[in-house]
Image 1: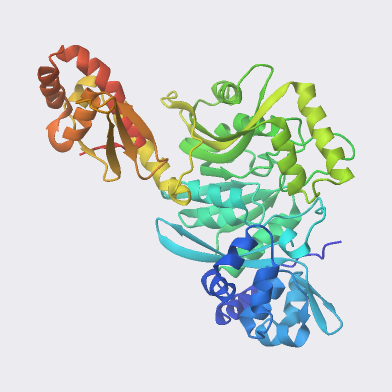
Image 2: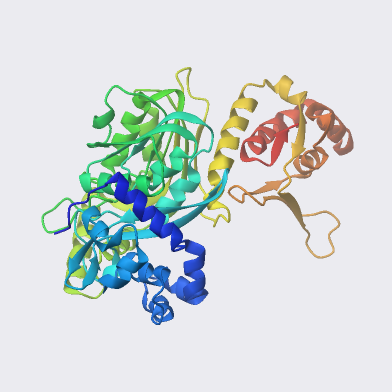
Length: 509
Protein backbone atom coordinates (compact mmCIF):
# COMPACT_ATOMS: atom_id res chain seq x y z
CA UNK A 1 0.00 0.00 0.00
CA UNK A 2 1.28 3.46 -0.84
CA UNK A 3 2.14 5.70 2.12
CA UNK A 4 -0.04 8.70 2.83
CA UNK A 5 1.37 11.86 1.29
CA UNK A 6 1.79 14.91 3.50
CA UNK A 7 2.37 18.13 1.48
CA UNK A 8 3.93 20.00 4.39
CA UNK A 9 4.89 23.52 3.17
CA UNK A 10 7.91 23.94 5.47
CA UNK A 11 9.34 20.54 4.57
CA UNK A 12 8.74 21.14 0.85
CA UNK A 13 10.63 24.43 1.09
CA UNK A 14 13.46 22.67 2.90
CA UNK A 15 13.57 19.91 0.27
CA UNK A 16 13.60 22.48 -2.55
CA UNK A 17 16.57 24.20 -0.90
CA UNK A 18 18.43 20.91 -0.58
CA UNK A 19 17.73 19.99 -4.21
CA UNK A 20 18.92 23.40 -5.34
CA UNK A 21 22.17 23.14 -3.40
CA UNK A 22 22.77 19.68 -4.85
CA UNK A 23 22.34 21.12 -8.38
CA UNK A 24 19.65 18.50 -8.90
CA UNK A 25 18.74 19.65 -12.40
CA UNK A 26 18.20 18.01 -15.77
CA UNK A 27 21.29 19.33 -17.54
CA UNK A 28 23.92 18.37 -14.92
CA UNK A 29 22.30 14.96 -14.44
CA UNK A 30 22.29 14.24 -18.17
CA UNK A 31 25.92 15.28 -18.30
CA UNK A 32 26.68 12.91 -15.41
CA UNK A 33 25.44 9.81 -17.18
CA UNK A 34 25.90 10.81 -20.83
CA UNK A 35 23.84 11.05 -24.01
CA UNK A 36 23.57 7.32 -24.72
CA UNK A 37 22.45 6.51 -21.18
CA UNK A 38 19.97 9.36 -21.35
CA UNK A 39 18.51 7.90 -24.56
CA UNK A 40 18.26 4.54 -22.78
CA UNK A 41 16.23 6.16 -19.97
CA UNK A 42 13.67 7.10 -22.62
CA UNK A 43 13.35 3.36 -23.29
CA UNK A 44 12.93 2.72 -19.52
CA UNK A 45 16.47 1.33 -19.19
CA UNK A 46 18.06 2.64 -15.99
CA UNK A 47 21.16 0.45 -15.89
CA UNK A 48 23.47 2.53 -18.14
CA UNK A 49 22.85 5.69 -16.11
CA UNK A 50 23.22 3.84 -12.81
CA UNK A 51 26.54 2.41 -13.98
CA UNK A 52 27.76 5.92 -14.71
CA UNK A 53 26.82 6.99 -11.16
CA UNK A 54 27.95 3.85 -9.29
CA UNK A 55 31.23 5.23 -7.88
CA UNK A 56 29.79 8.60 -6.88
CA UNK A 57 28.54 9.49 -3.39
CA UNK A 58 28.02 13.23 -3.92
CA UNK A 59 24.53 14.61 -3.18
CA UNK A 60 23.42 14.77 -6.84
CA UNK A 61 24.34 11.12 -7.46
CA UNK A 62 22.68 9.91 -4.23
CA UNK A 63 19.51 11.85 -4.99
CA UNK A 64 19.46 10.65 -8.60
CA UNK A 65 19.61 7.02 -7.50
CA UNK A 66 16.96 7.61 -4.85
CA UNK A 67 14.49 10.01 -6.49
CA UNK A 68 14.98 9.48 -10.24
CA UNK A 69 15.66 5.74 -10.41
CA UNK A 70 13.92 4.62 -7.22
CA UNK A 71 16.90 2.79 -5.72
CA UNK A 72 17.25 2.31 -1.97
CA UNK A 73 20.13 4.36 -0.51
CA UNK A 74 22.01 4.34 2.83
CA UNK A 75 20.31 6.66 5.29
CA UNK A 76 23.59 8.42 6.16
CA UNK A 77 24.11 9.28 2.47
CA UNK A 78 20.57 10.64 2.18
CA UNK A 79 20.95 12.70 5.34
CA UNK A 80 24.18 14.15 3.99
CA UNK A 81 22.57 14.92 0.61
CA UNK A 82 19.54 16.55 2.25
CA UNK A 83 20.95 18.47 5.24
CA UNK A 84 17.79 20.50 5.90
CA UNK A 85 15.20 17.83 5.07
CA UNK A 86 16.95 14.65 6.12
CA UNK A 87 15.64 11.18 5.51
CA UNK A 88 13.10 11.80 8.27
CA UNK A 89 11.66 14.69 6.29
CA UNK A 90 11.27 12.55 3.17
CA UNK A 91 9.48 9.93 5.25
CA UNK A 92 7.18 12.57 6.78
CA UNK A 93 6.29 13.87 3.30
CA UNK A 94 5.39 10.31 2.27
CA UNK A 95 8.07 10.24 -0.43
CA UNK A 96 10.17 7.51 1.24
CA UNK A 97 10.22 5.02 4.09
CA UNK A 98 12.94 3.99 6.50
CA UNK A 99 14.16 0.39 6.41
CA UNK A 100 16.76 0.02 9.13
CA UNK A 101 19.84 1.93 8.00
CA UNK A 102 18.47 2.43 4.50
CA UNK A 103 15.95 4.76 2.86
CA UNK A 104 13.55 3.19 0.39
CA UNK A 105 11.87 5.63 -2.04
CA UNK A 106 8.09 5.53 -2.35
CA UNK A 107 7.84 8.22 -5.01
CA UNK A 108 9.94 10.01 -7.59
CA UNK A 109 10.98 13.64 -7.58
CA UNK A 110 12.44 14.43 -10.98
CA UNK A 111 13.69 17.63 -12.59
CA UNK A 112 11.73 18.58 -15.70
CA UNK A 113 13.10 21.28 -17.97
CA UNK A 114 10.89 23.30 -20.31
CA UNK A 115 10.93 26.35 -22.53
CA UNK A 116 8.06 28.72 -23.33
CA UNK A 117 7.50 32.32 -24.41
CA UNK A 118 8.89 33.52 -21.11
CA UNK A 119 12.13 31.59 -21.56
CA UNK A 120 13.62 28.39 -20.17
CA UNK A 121 12.75 26.94 -16.81
CA UNK A 122 12.77 23.81 -14.71
CA UNK A 123 10.47 22.19 -12.19
CA UNK A 124 10.78 19.34 -9.73
CA UNK A 125 7.80 17.04 -10.28
CA UNK A 126 6.70 14.49 -7.66
CA UNK A 127 4.84 11.35 -8.72
CA UNK A 128 4.61 7.64 -8.06
CA UNK A 129 7.39 5.19 -8.80
CA UNK A 130 7.15 4.06 -12.42
CA UNK A 131 8.61 1.36 -14.64
CA UNK A 132 12.00 3.05 -14.68
CA UNK A 133 12.12 2.70 -10.89
CA UNK A 134 10.14 -0.50 -10.36
CA UNK A 135 11.06 -2.53 -13.43
CA UNK A 136 8.48 -4.60 -15.28
CA UNK A 137 5.19 -5.43 -13.61
CA UNK A 138 1.59 -4.24 -13.38
CA UNK A 139 1.06 -0.81 -11.87
CA UNK A 140 -1.24 -0.02 -8.95
CA UNK A 141 -4.65 1.19 -10.09
CA UNK A 142 -4.28 4.43 -8.07
CA UNK A 143 -0.89 5.08 -9.65
CA UNK A 144 -0.13 8.78 -10.27
CA UNK A 145 1.82 9.33 -13.47
CA UNK A 146 4.71 11.75 -13.66
CA UNK A 147 5.61 13.77 -16.73
CA UNK A 148 4.98 11.63 -19.82
CA UNK A 149 4.88 12.36 -23.51
CA UNK A 150 1.25 13.49 -23.42
CA UNK A 151 2.00 15.84 -20.52
CA UNK A 152 4.84 17.49 -22.43
CA UNK A 153 2.68 17.77 -25.54
CA UNK A 154 -0.22 19.49 -23.77
CA UNK A 155 2.09 21.80 -21.84
CA UNK A 156 3.59 22.92 -25.14
CA UNK A 157 0.13 23.42 -26.65
CA UNK A 158 -1.11 25.75 -23.92
CA UNK A 159 -1.84 29.22 -25.27
CA UNK A 160 0.68 31.61 -23.68
CA UNK A 161 -1.68 34.62 -23.64
CA UNK A 162 -2.46 36.15 -20.25
CA UNK A 163 -5.49 34.75 -18.46
CA UNK A 164 -7.28 35.36 -15.19
CA UNK A 165 -8.54 32.03 -13.88
CA UNK A 166 -7.56 28.70 -15.41
CA UNK A 167 -9.06 25.28 -14.71
CA UNK A 168 -6.76 22.25 -14.94
CA UNK A 169 -9.26 19.41 -15.26
CA UNK A 170 -7.72 16.13 -14.09
CA UNK A 171 -4.44 17.59 -12.92
CA UNK A 172 -2.59 14.38 -12.03
CA UNK A 173 0.88 15.31 -10.75
CA UNK A 174 0.12 18.98 -11.47
CA UNK A 175 2.40 19.77 -14.40
CA UNK A 176 -0.37 21.46 -16.44
CA UNK A 177 -1.30 23.61 -13.46
CA UNK A 178 2.33 24.70 -13.10
CA UNK A 179 2.50 25.58 -16.80
CA UNK A 180 -0.81 27.47 -16.64
CA UNK A 181 0.34 29.48 -13.63
CA UNK A 182 3.14 30.88 -15.82
CA UNK A 183 0.54 33.08 -17.58
CA UNK A 184 -2.54 32.89 -15.32
CA UNK A 185 -3.41 34.80 -12.16
CA UNK A 186 -4.85 31.72 -10.47
CA UNK A 187 -5.37 28.03 -11.22
CA UNK A 188 -7.94 25.56 -9.93
CA UNK A 189 -6.67 21.98 -10.29
CA UNK A 190 -9.14 19.11 -9.96
CA UNK A 191 -8.84 15.33 -9.90
CA UNK A 192 -10.77 12.28 -8.73
CA UNK A 193 -7.64 11.09 -6.90
CA UNK A 194 -6.74 12.61 -3.56
CA UNK A 195 -3.27 11.11 -4.01
CA UNK A 196 -2.87 12.94 -7.33
CA UNK A 197 -3.94 16.21 -5.71
CA UNK A 198 -1.40 15.66 -2.92
CA UNK A 199 1.35 15.15 -5.49
CA UNK A 200 0.20 18.30 -7.31
CA UNK A 201 0.41 20.28 -4.06
CA UNK A 202 3.90 18.92 -3.35
CA UNK A 203 5.05 19.82 -6.87
CA UNK A 204 3.67 23.36 -6.52
CA UNK A 205 5.30 23.82 -3.12
CA UNK A 206 8.66 22.46 -4.30
CA UNK A 207 8.68 25.03 -7.09
CA UNK A 208 7.41 27.95 -5.02
CA UNK A 209 4.28 28.26 -7.17
CA UNK A 210 1.35 29.87 -5.37
CA UNK A 211 -2.31 30.47 -6.32
CA UNK A 212 -2.90 26.83 -7.29
CA UNK A 213 -6.02 25.54 -5.55
CA UNK A 214 -6.72 21.79 -5.60
CA UNK A 215 -10.22 20.31 -5.48
CA UNK A 216 -11.39 16.69 -5.34
CA UNK A 217 -14.07 15.46 -7.72
CA UNK A 218 -15.00 14.12 -11.15
CA UNK A 219 -15.09 16.21 -14.34
CA UNK A 220 -16.83 19.57 -13.74
CA UNK A 221 -18.48 18.69 -10.41
CA UNK A 222 -15.85 20.50 -8.27
CA UNK A 223 -16.41 23.75 -10.22
CA UNK A 224 -20.18 23.70 -10.64
CA UNK A 225 -21.48 27.15 -11.56
CA UNK A 226 -18.01 28.63 -12.10
CA UNK A 227 -16.47 29.95 -15.31
CA UNK A 228 -12.84 30.29 -16.40
CA UNK A 229 -10.81 32.17 -18.98
CA UNK A 230 -9.03 28.97 -19.93
CA UNK A 231 -9.53 25.26 -19.36
CA UNK A 232 -6.72 22.78 -19.94
CA UNK A 233 -7.02 19.05 -19.53
CA UNK A 234 -5.11 15.87 -20.12
CA UNK A 235 -8.16 13.78 -19.21
CA UNK A 236 -8.21 10.01 -18.66
CA UNK A 237 -9.15 9.45 -22.30
CA UNK A 238 -7.77 5.93 -22.79
CA UNK A 239 -10.41 3.52 -24.10
CA UNK A 240 -10.47 0.49 -21.80
CA UNK A 241 -12.87 -2.48 -21.67
CA UNK A 242 -15.40 -2.02 -18.89
CA UNK A 243 -15.43 -5.64 -17.76
CA UNK A 244 -14.27 -7.51 -14.66
CA UNK A 245 -10.65 -8.56 -14.68
CA UNK A 246 -9.35 -5.60 -16.71
CA UNK A 247 -7.52 -3.14 -14.46
CA UNK A 248 -8.53 0.51 -14.65
CA UNK A 249 -5.93 3.15 -13.89
CA UNK A 250 -7.10 6.46 -12.49
CA UNK A 251 -4.47 8.41 -14.40
CA UNK A 252 -5.61 7.22 -17.84
CA UNK A 253 -9.00 5.42 -17.76
CA UNK A 254 -12.16 7.49 -17.57
CA UNK A 255 -14.40 4.66 -16.40
CA UNK A 256 -16.86 5.02 -19.30
CA UNK A 257 -17.50 2.92 -22.39
CA UNK A 258 -15.43 3.80 -25.46
CA UNK A 259 -14.78 7.51 -25.96
CA UNK A 260 -17.77 8.63 -23.88
CA UNK A 261 -15.60 10.54 -21.39
CA UNK A 262 -14.27 12.79 -24.15
CA UNK A 263 -17.85 13.33 -25.30
CA UNK A 264 -18.78 14.42 -21.76
CA UNK A 265 -15.86 16.86 -21.61
CA UNK A 266 -16.98 18.41 -24.92
CA UNK A 267 -20.58 18.63 -23.72
CA UNK A 268 -19.68 20.32 -20.43
CA UNK A 269 -16.76 22.57 -21.24
CA UNK A 270 -18.65 25.46 -22.86
CA UNK A 271 -20.73 26.22 -19.77
CA UNK A 272 -17.54 26.70 -17.75
CA UNK A 273 -15.90 29.18 -20.13
CA UNK A 274 -16.35 32.93 -20.11
CA UNK A 275 -17.38 34.36 -23.52
CA UNK A 276 -14.30 34.04 -25.71
CA UNK A 277 -12.67 31.66 -23.22
CA UNK A 278 -10.73 28.71 -24.61
CA UNK A 279 -10.37 25.04 -23.74
CA UNK A 280 -7.50 22.78 -24.78
CA UNK A 281 -7.28 19.07 -24.20
CA UNK A 282 -5.92 15.83 -25.60
CA UNK A 283 -8.30 13.06 -26.60
CA UNK A 284 -8.96 9.73 -28.26
CA UNK A 285 -11.94 9.23 -30.55
CA UNK A 286 -13.22 6.08 -32.17
CA UNK A 287 -14.05 5.45 -35.80
CA UNK A 288 -16.95 3.04 -35.68
CA UNK A 289 -19.98 1.87 -37.60
CA UNK A 290 -18.66 3.47 -40.77
CA UNK A 291 -18.35 6.90 -39.15
CA UNK A 292 -14.93 8.54 -39.14
CA UNK A 293 -13.61 9.60 -35.73
CA UNK A 294 -13.16 13.24 -36.69
CA UNK A 295 -16.78 13.35 -37.80
CA UNK A 296 -17.86 11.84 -34.47
CA UNK A 297 -16.14 14.56 -32.48
CA UNK A 298 -17.46 17.18 -34.91
CA UNK A 299 -20.97 15.97 -34.11
CA UNK A 300 -20.36 16.33 -30.36
CA UNK A 301 -19.03 19.87 -30.75
CA UNK A 302 -21.74 21.04 -33.13
CA UNK A 303 -24.46 19.79 -30.73
CA UNK A 304 -22.86 21.37 -27.66
CA UNK A 305 -25.40 23.34 -25.60
CA UNK A 306 -23.00 26.33 -25.82
CA UNK A 307 -21.80 27.49 -29.29
CA UNK A 308 -18.12 26.65 -29.76
CA UNK A 309 -15.42 27.55 -32.22
CA UNK A 310 -13.46 24.37 -32.91
CA UNK A 311 -10.05 23.33 -34.17
CA UNK A 312 -9.45 19.59 -33.90
CA UNK A 313 -6.21 18.01 -35.10
CA UNK A 314 -5.76 14.27 -35.41
CA UNK A 315 -2.07 13.49 -34.99
CA UNK A 316 -2.20 9.70 -35.04
CA UNK A 317 -4.58 6.89 -35.89
CA UNK A 318 -4.15 3.30 -34.70
CA UNK A 319 -6.03 0.16 -35.60
CA UNK A 320 -7.63 -1.77 -32.72
CA UNK A 321 -4.72 -4.23 -32.38
CA UNK A 322 -2.11 -1.46 -32.26
CA UNK A 323 -4.13 0.54 -29.76
CA UNK A 324 -4.75 -2.42 -27.46
CA UNK A 325 -1.10 -3.50 -27.56
CA UNK A 326 0.07 -0.02 -26.61
CA UNK A 327 -2.13 0.37 -23.54
CA UNK A 328 -1.77 -3.21 -22.27
CA UNK A 329 1.98 -2.63 -22.37
CA UNK A 330 1.57 0.79 -20.73
CA UNK A 331 -0.05 -0.90 -17.74
CA UNK A 332 3.12 -2.94 -17.18
CA UNK A 333 2.01 -6.27 -18.68
CA UNK A 334 4.78 -7.78 -20.79
CA UNK A 335 4.03 -9.06 -24.32
CA UNK A 336 4.03 -12.83 -24.69
CA UNK A 337 2.67 -13.53 -21.22
CA UNK A 338 -0.72 -15.23 -20.68
CA UNK A 339 -1.97 -12.10 -18.91
CA UNK A 340 -0.99 -9.95 -21.90
CA UNK A 341 -2.93 -12.22 -24.27
CA UNK A 342 -5.97 -12.22 -21.96
CA UNK A 343 -6.04 -8.43 -21.77
CA UNK A 344 -5.42 -8.06 -25.50
CA UNK A 345 -8.38 -10.34 -26.23
CA UNK A 346 -10.59 -8.30 -23.88
CA UNK A 347 -9.69 -5.09 -25.73
CA UNK A 348 -10.31 -6.60 -29.14
CA UNK A 349 -13.67 -8.06 -28.02
CA UNK A 350 -14.65 -4.63 -26.70
CA UNK A 351 -13.77 -2.91 -29.97
CA UNK A 352 -15.52 -5.59 -32.03
CA UNK A 353 -18.73 -5.19 -30.01
CA UNK A 354 -18.94 -1.51 -31.05
CA UNK A 355 -17.68 -1.98 -34.59
CA UNK A 356 -14.55 0.10 -33.94
CA UNK A 357 -12.16 0.17 -36.89
CA UNK A 358 -9.64 2.71 -35.58
CA UNK A 359 -8.81 5.11 -32.77
CA UNK A 360 -7.56 8.65 -33.36
CA UNK A 361 -5.42 10.70 -31.01
CA UNK A 362 -5.13 14.43 -31.22
CA UNK A 363 -5.50 17.96 -29.97
CA UNK A 364 -8.78 19.76 -29.31
CA UNK A 365 -9.00 23.56 -29.14
CA UNK A 366 -12.45 25.01 -28.37
CA UNK A 367 -13.58 28.57 -27.77
CA UNK A 368 -16.88 29.82 -26.42
CA UNK A 369 -18.55 31.70 -29.26
CA UNK A 370 -21.78 33.22 -27.95
CA UNK A 371 -22.23 35.27 -31.13
CA UNK A 372 -21.97 32.10 -33.22
CA UNK A 373 -19.02 29.95 -34.32
CA UNK A 374 -16.68 31.30 -36.99
CA UNK A 375 -14.01 28.58 -36.78
CA UNK A 376 -14.77 24.96 -37.67
CA UNK A 377 -11.62 23.09 -38.59
CA UNK A 378 -11.09 19.32 -38.43
CA UNK A 379 -7.88 18.01 -39.97
CA UNK A 380 -5.20 15.36 -39.90
CA UNK A 381 -1.58 16.41 -39.43
CA UNK A 382 0.45 13.20 -39.25
CA UNK A 383 3.88 14.66 -40.06
CA UNK A 384 6.43 15.17 -37.27
CA UNK A 385 6.49 18.71 -35.90
CA UNK A 386 9.91 20.01 -34.96
CA UNK A 387 8.60 22.71 -32.61
CA UNK A 388 5.81 20.75 -30.88
CA UNK A 389 6.88 22.09 -27.49
CA UNK A 390 6.23 25.64 -28.73
CA UNK A 391 2.98 25.11 -30.60
CA UNK A 392 1.04 27.16 -28.05
CA UNK A 393 2.42 30.39 -29.51
CA UNK A 394 1.56 29.24 -33.03
CA UNK A 395 -2.00 28.33 -32.02
CA UNK A 396 -2.48 31.68 -30.30
CA UNK A 397 -1.23 33.52 -33.37
CA UNK A 398 -3.47 31.41 -35.61
CA UNK A 399 -6.54 32.30 -33.52
CA UNK A 400 -5.69 36.00 -33.74
CA UNK A 401 -5.12 35.73 -37.49
CA UNK A 402 -8.40 33.85 -37.92
CA UNK A 403 -10.30 36.56 -36.07
CA UNK A 404 -8.57 39.35 -37.98
CA UNK A 405 -9.27 37.90 -41.44
CA UNK A 406 -12.82 36.84 -40.50
CA UNK A 407 -13.56 40.50 -39.66
CA UNK A 408 -12.46 41.62 -43.14
CA UNK A 409 -14.80 41.66 -46.10
CA UNK A 410 -13.27 40.58 -49.40
CA UNK A 411 -13.07 44.26 -50.34
CA UNK A 412 -11.22 45.09 -47.11
CA UNK A 413 -8.88 42.12 -47.59
CA UNK A 414 -8.11 43.30 -51.12
CA UNK A 415 -7.06 46.62 -49.62
CA UNK A 416 -4.82 45.05 -46.99
CA UNK A 417 -1.04 44.86 -47.20
CA UNK A 418 0.55 41.53 -46.27
CA UNK A 419 4.00 40.17 -45.53
CA UNK A 420 5.38 36.66 -46.03
CA UNK A 421 6.40 35.00 -42.75
CA UNK A 422 10.16 34.68 -42.28
CA UNK A 423 10.01 30.86 -42.06
CA UNK A 424 8.28 30.37 -45.44
CA UNK A 425 10.28 28.98 -48.36
CA UNK A 426 9.30 28.06 -51.90
CA UNK A 427 10.30 24.95 -53.84
CA UNK A 428 9.69 24.54 -57.59
CA UNK A 429 9.75 21.11 -59.20
CA UNK A 430 10.40 20.70 -62.91
CA UNK A 431 10.30 17.67 -65.13
CA UNK A 432 13.59 17.29 -67.04
CA UNK A 433 13.81 19.83 -69.84
CA UNK A 434 10.64 21.68 -68.88
CA UNK A 435 10.77 25.46 -68.72
CA UNK A 436 7.84 25.85 -66.30
CA UNK A 437 7.51 24.05 -62.96
CA UNK A 438 5.00 21.22 -62.66
CA UNK A 439 4.65 21.76 -58.90
CA UNK A 440 5.20 24.89 -56.80
CA UNK A 441 5.34 24.22 -53.09
CA UNK A 442 5.20 26.71 -50.23
CA UNK A 443 6.78 25.31 -47.09
CA UNK A 444 6.50 26.48 -43.50
CA UNK A 445 9.52 26.06 -41.21
CA UNK A 446 7.69 26.63 -37.92
CA UNK A 447 4.19 25.86 -36.68
CA UNK A 448 2.93 22.54 -38.00
CA UNK A 449 5.48 22.49 -40.81
CA UNK A 450 2.75 22.68 -43.44
CA UNK A 451 3.33 22.37 -47.16
CA UNK A 452 0.92 24.02 -49.62
CA UNK A 453 0.84 23.40 -53.34
CA UNK A 454 0.38 26.67 -55.18
CA UNK A 455 -0.44 27.52 -58.76
CA UNK A 456 1.61 30.27 -60.47
CA UNK A 457 -0.93 32.94 -59.48
CA UNK A 458 -0.90 32.10 -55.77
CA UNK A 459 2.88 31.68 -55.73
CA UNK A 460 3.21 35.04 -57.47
CA UNK A 461 0.91 36.72 -54.98
CA UNK A 462 2.79 35.30 -51.98
CA UNK A 463 6.11 36.28 -53.51
CA UNK A 464 4.93 39.86 -53.93
CA UNK A 465 3.67 40.23 -50.33
CA UNK A 466 6.39 42.47 -48.88
CA UNK A 467 4.07 45.01 -47.25
CA UNK A 468 4.30 47.58 -50.04
CA UNK A 469 1.41 46.68 -52.34
CA UNK A 470 -2.18 45.89 -51.35
CA UNK A 471 -3.53 42.44 -52.17
CA UNK A 472 -5.87 43.92 -54.78
CA UNK A 473 -2.98 45.67 -56.51
CA UNK A 474 -1.02 42.42 -56.67
CA UNK A 475 -4.05 40.55 -58.04
CA UNK A 476 -4.55 43.19 -60.74
CA UNK A 477 -0.92 42.94 -61.82
CA UNK A 478 -1.07 39.13 -61.90
CA UNK A 479 -4.29 39.19 -63.94
CA UNK A 480 -2.55 41.39 -66.49
CA UNK A 481 0.55 39.15 -66.64
CA UNK A 482 -1.45 35.91 -66.84
CA UNK A 483 -4.05 37.41 -69.19
CA UNK A 484 -7.02 36.33 -67.08
CA UNK A 485 -10.09 38.10 -65.72
CA UNK A 486 -9.20 40.10 -62.62
CA UNK A 487 -12.49 39.47 -60.78
CA UNK A 488 -12.29 35.72 -61.41
CA UNK A 489 -8.66 35.63 -60.25
CA UNK A 490 -9.52 37.54 -57.08
CA UNK A 491 -12.41 35.14 -56.37
CA UNK A 492 -10.00 32.19 -56.55
CA UNK A 493 -7.10 33.79 -54.65
CA UNK A 494 -8.78 35.53 -51.70
CA UNK A 495 -9.97 32.29 -49.97
CA UNK A 496 -6.43 30.91 -50.31
CA UNK A 497 -5.03 34.13 -48.84
CA UNK A 498 -7.36 33.78 -45.85
CA UNK A 499 -6.13 30.22 -45.25
CA UNK A 500 -2.49 31.28 -45.53
CA UNK A 501 -3.09 34.04 -43.00
CA UNK A 502 -4.57 31.61 -40.48
CA UNK A 503 -1.79 29.07 -40.99
CA UNK A 504 0.92 31.68 -40.58
CA UNK A 505 2.34 31.77 -44.12
CA UNK A 506 1.20 35.39 -44.44
CA UNK A 507 0.66 38.16 -41.90
CA UNK A 508 -1.12 41.49 -42.01
CA UNK A 509 1.52 44.17 -42.44
